[in-house]
Image (cartoon, rainbow, N blue to C red; front, side, top):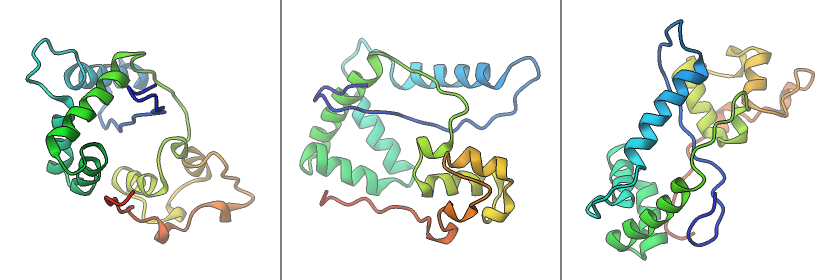
Length: 169
């Protein structure tokens, strides 16, 4: 996807946690969930009062990502939240209006997530406390370069920490 400034946005990701009924495949259920999310969050509004950038910054601030919100306000608005929200809205509009959402199935997590996010996913959804809690198949689902013959290629579990966002970038 290209932004209004010509930069490339390779991916936007999300984790969907649900109890699938037997009549739907995982892909069908995930597609339905994302359709609802994207139609609600990124649909075209006839009313200019809805500002997607403002909604995104509010979401960040209300969900423990205030460091990211502060970084974005500094980067996109030179410290001014209204300017940042307007710039982010233009970026979001450009990204989600063309070409739209594309799904990729059976991709390893490291294709889209940083190490900390992979660990957070494993801790929250698999209840893992370390690499020993996972099978080789699970590890291969996390890292495309994982080889059971050389398990030392996995990142150090304890070194996988939340990155710090700052305004100096």
